[in-house]
Length: 340
Image (cartoon, rainbow, N blue to C red; front, side, top):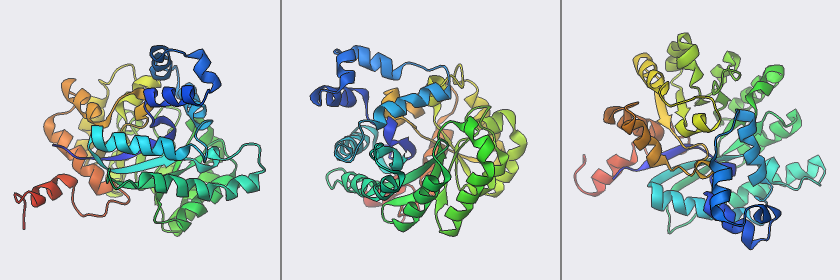
């Protein structure tokens, strides 16, 4: 049995379509009227989009219903599903807490309301019957003003028991005019002792080498080995890894097929750059983490040696994994077949 660490999963895309559909109908949400039958809703949620920006509109749809009074429901369901059906024993769930606050409130009140959001998610993720190690990554957002993004960084640093790192998300073409601003925010995060990751080099429009030195991990990063392989030696030297989310690239139209990922794996392996496999939005895709591995195997994108390397790298690069070794070694020790 393989145990998994999930390092890149968004709260907005983590709830499986059927759970989301049932919630919409139980709460008499207007969207339920548009999709009275589940099959039509699943087709709408999981169909490929024409671009990353169009794809991200799905997050806005989910964020509207992920409010303080409903967060515990959604988080408890995704934790249960990840533990039972995906053998996930470690999860970093990322989200932008500001986007779960009341949009009718003034900015200052919304900023103050972010802390209870993080507390609610932490409490919902702590389920003794499904004992995975659970932490949060708070996402700055390319559509949010500096004041809010700075408050997100400060909040993350003030809640080390609940939060393990900072991310930068949102439409990546919007980074260009705010690069110095985002660099200053990442520097601030590092000064506060936070781990950092960021959505970079996912699309050809999202390639900003200026941000790379400020990251512990690179969210997606597939365009580095595909278009800018000369950057790989520096990434290896900084011991950064790429958080690869295969199904996402088909859903966003970034890749027409998964075939280019063969070059991503081969070039990264030659350069000594680790890759971790993640789901990104397991619910929106209706695809679980074990299938991401299985799909790449059956397509001959990776072999079993590379699969195991990805699994081990996920625990090694995890921001809050409390052990010094992958979970499979712990299982062997507990079974009496591992080292002393």
